[in-house]
Image: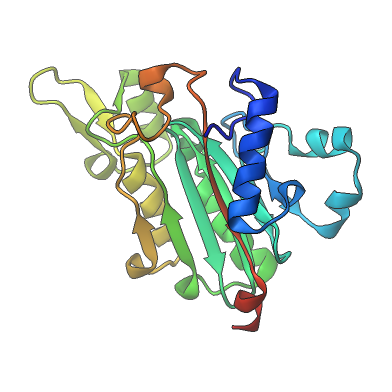
Amino acid sequence: FNQGEHCGDDKESVCMNRLLLSEAIAIPKDRIIAPIQIHKDEVKVIESSFFSLSNEEQRAYLYGVDALITSLPNVCVAVSTADCVPVLLYAPDVHVVAAIHAGWRGTILQIVKKVTRSLIEKYGANPSLMRAGIGPSISVDVFEVGEEVVEAFYEKGFDLDKVMRRDPESNKAHIDLWEANRLQLVACGLSGEHIEIARICTYTHYEDFFSARRLGVESGRLLSGIALNNQSLKD
């Protein structure tokens, strides 16, 4: 059930998978919006004008983007992952949602903090009311990294005692991306009780979830999305 359009799969198969997803969640296929990610921290907003663009213009708008925000009802903003961390945000007081792709590079760039602050500063969202979900992704147990990655986290001000541990036998460093992104949310004012972590490791559970590190970069992609429905707007 690959949802990724940029990982070598047959385009017609992916299109059919997206159609099946559309039917399952009752949102039109062209209202399920996923960016063309490049592991940076570019954030774009999906407004009603987006749907008047041509297909080529839409692709250009979405290229190089790793997070999407929208306040439109029945529009699902989503990100594709296969070990990287998907983070979904909901600001109930201002009716805004966001989907964020946070691999280790995006985590270092603090894209989650950037998006959360956008909801606070641009939309007036109260962070204490926000809800966040951290989806299936690679766990600290298996996310071994080189010393250059450890140094990059250190240089960006991450507390290594909280986001990094070493294997007692190999002394190799492991980064906890779940915690690194959770800490960004907390730093922005979210309550720990309002942050849900799936705690499902894609690498370990590769038979159920795509894992680029275990299965290769063309293994397929998960799609994690969030949408406002009419009921949420009434609430």
